[in-house]
Each structure stands twice: as C-alpha cells, then as structure tokens.
Amino acid sequence: MEEISRSTQRSALVVSCVSSFMTPYLSAGLTIALPAIGAALKLDAVVLGWVTTSFLVAAAAFLLPFGKLGDMTGRKRIYLIGNILYALFSVAAALAPNGALLIAAGALLGLAAAMIYGTGVAILTAVYPPERRGGVLGINVAFTYAGLSLGPLLGGVLTQQLGWRSVFLLNVPFGLLAAVLVVTRLKGEWRGAKGQRFDALGALLSIVSLGLLIYGLTILPATGGFFLVAAGLFGLLLFVWRESAAPNPLLSLSLFKGNRVFGMSNLAALINYSATFALTFFLSLYLQYLKGLTPEETGLILISQPALMAVVSPLAGRLSDRYQPRLLASVGMGIMAVMLVLLSMVGPATPLALLVAELMVVGVGYALFSSPNTNAVMGSVDRPFYGVASATLGTMRLVGQMLSMGVAMLVLSLHVGGAAITPSRYPLFLASQRLSFALFAALCVAGVFASLARGKSGVEARQKA
Image 1 (cartoon, helix red, strand yellow):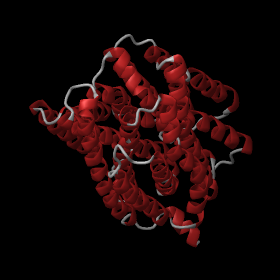
Image 2 (tube, rainbow, N blue to C red; image 1 turned 180 degrees about the vertical axis):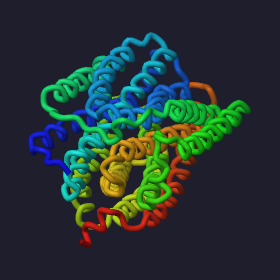
Image 3 (tube, one colour; image 1 turned 135 degrees about the horizontal axis):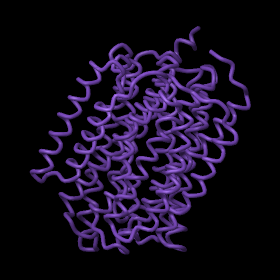
C-alpha cells in the first residue's frame, strides 16, 4: 500500500463530509416541504411520493455504473462532476413550474447523487489504513446524519419563511463548496480498475430493470404494475446472467459468491433501509395534517431521530474497530424493530413527547447499525474493489429506500387513493401509516437474522490478530 499523506487523508475526509451532509439534507428537508409543494402545485399524496421517489430511482439505477466508471477513470473525477451537477440540478428543481418538471429535476438530482455516492466512501477507504477505517467512516456517517438532522429543521424554516423552492436552492452553495475543495485540497487520483472496458450492456440492464421495478411497485395493484414488476425482475435476472459472463463486469458477482460477509452485510443494509426510510415521509404528513403543526414545528420534532444518529455514529464506528460489527449492527436493527412496533400504535392523541422519545431511540438503533455495517462491507473486500463495494452498498441503500417508498405509496393508494389528504381521509391515512410501520417492523426482525448470519468479517479477523 502506497503511503498516503495525513494532509490528503484530512482533505478527503473534509470533502466527503461536505457531500455527505448535502444529499441527505435535501431528502430530509424535502419531506417537510411536501405538503406545501402539494398545495402549490396541486398534487395528490401518491404524486407527492414521486417527488422523493424519482430521486431515489435515478440514484439507485446509476450508482453501480458510476461506481465502476470511478474505478476505471478516477474516483475523484466522477466525484467532482457529481457535485457540480448536483448544484446545477438543484437550481432546475427550484425553478420547476409544475409537478412533472419537478419530478424530472428530482431524477436528474438522483443521477448526480449517484456520482457522489458511488465514489465518496471508496475514496475515504482508499486513503485511510484499515485500522483507522471504522472511526473515519463513523465520522462520515455522522455528517450524513447531521444532514438528516438539520434537514427537517432547515426545510421547515425555509418552507415557512421563504417557500419550498428555497429548500433546493440551499443545496447550491454546498455543491459548489464541495467542488472547490476537491480541486484545491484533494491531491491525487484513485483507480481500482484501470484499463478495463466499461460494461455498457450491463449498465443498461441495471438502469432499465430497476426503473421498471420501482415504477411498477408504485402503481400496484393496477394490472400494468404487475407486468412492470415482472419485467423489472426478469431484467435483473438478465443482469445477473450478463455479469456472470462479462469479462469486465459492472458488478463482480464473485464478491457475493465467495464472500459471505459482503453478501449478507449488503442484504442487511437493503432490509434496514427498506424498513426505515418511509418513516419520516409518513410522520411529516402525520404531524402537519393530523396534528396541525407548521413546517418549522414538524422539523423540530423530526430532528430528534437523526440528531441521535449524528451523536452516536462516530462512537459506533470506533466500537466496530474493537468489537464485532455484526453484533453491533444486529443490536441496532433489533432496537429499530421494537420501536417500529411502538410507532405503529401512534394515533391522533399520541403525546408529542412520547413520539420524540421513540424517534430518539430509533436514531440510536440506526447509528448502531449503519457505521459497523459499512465497516464490515468495506473491510471484506480488497483494494481494487473499493469503488464497486461502495457503489454496491450505496445501491442497497437506495434500492431499500425505493422499496420503502414503494410500500408507502402502495399502501397509501390502497387506502387513500389518488386524492389529496383532507380531514375526511385522515382515518384512512392513519390506517396506511399503521400498516406500513407494522410491515417495516417485520422487515427489521428479518434483518436481525441476516445481520447475524454474515459470519465474522475481515474487521473481526484483524481484531483477533
């Protein structure tokens, strides 16, 4: 391993933390702004879900291709372009005059985010030695949760004081700052697959298949939804077949076949995000519609969960350098399962103090899972595969988030239908929330078993040594 200067390591961490704050800030802040967007652009509950989901679909579909391109052409280059585009597309979203163009701008933001997600953690993993990796990843995750923490607060304040479009515009200085820091502070370039050919057919199959799958999920139980889901699943099978035969695959399936830790850790991440992402979506609508809170007040309530994530994540990352990541992650997933059961009982008379307390415990569970699980994934592969491993984990996160929103939108369409959430439909909305949270709790229970089944990671082997 070549010697990496401390200056380069610090610069990589600073740049990564800026971007790690920026992207989750938008998703969290946008959730608070959804009722205002719905009122301004006259969108129903299901279409409002697509404002968030379009971002996730594009980010998940393009993550693996950009992760591979980063390994081939330079991770810093892809990361830089991603940050610049993220700032530009944020302006486009802020200027969108209707729901269709806003959803399209969200998809473009997702494409730019894929360039950032697919390379940021890979750069960090490349410049820091294994014995320091867990702590650094914990710091990076803490900034992600800081974005999630301040997102509801900033989104609420901006929406109430300046309008929902300002939620997007705040992203612009963050994206430009990250780009400037990359150019001026981050010296060097990192490639893990130089000289390989890009698997364009594999990229096309993954992009189209994921898009068909999630769109089909959102329009179920319509007949067309079943056909689209089937087509998406068939396309993913073709993608797996293609990658098993390709000389330079987009996704090296050997990482899954011969690496139980890598495979089960990614499965645990997929389950975790499938079970938790739509939590904020539902509670934002619940607090503003059923509880009558303002966007600012809603943001202050929802900040409790990610605030605890940001505080606990660095500690969880350091603990994963000393103790078994699978045990820490499994405990975290178990905590979230219990709290989702309790949250499924939330009703119109639930005290806000109790809701805040439950969200804080969810935040602790989330932090105990995320940093150790990321450490286990990145510690289970060799250096040439850091970019693909980072992109694979990011894909699991985004596909999980898509599935979470897919479940939410499906349940909402079954209960509320294609109509705005009005007082007469509040009981139907609450029934949708309760059913979704119960399903998410069951998913978390399955995730505990997936997390425990991964076996000992390379991190744990180093701990014994």
